[in-house]
Length: 96
Image (cartoon, rainbow, N blue to C red; front, top):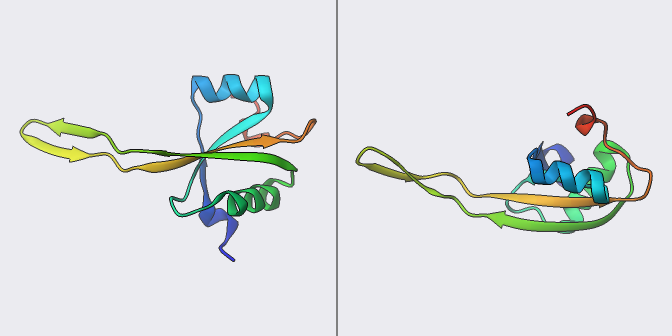
């Protein structure tokens, strides 16, 4: 099994993710591209000690960027929206 800290890269904080977190107790994370839903669920439960009810994933494509005549792309990444059981909280999102 992979190390859970290799699967969960960082929390994804945006206005939309903060609103969804308050309304539906769903947290958003940037995860490894090759991670699947069951690996993400086990990693979140092991790292934070919470009960995960549902995991949704989405691949975010890289965008084309220009710097003068040079053209490049930003890296693609994967995000996971993790719904927790009623009453469970993840402390790293508190106070943001």
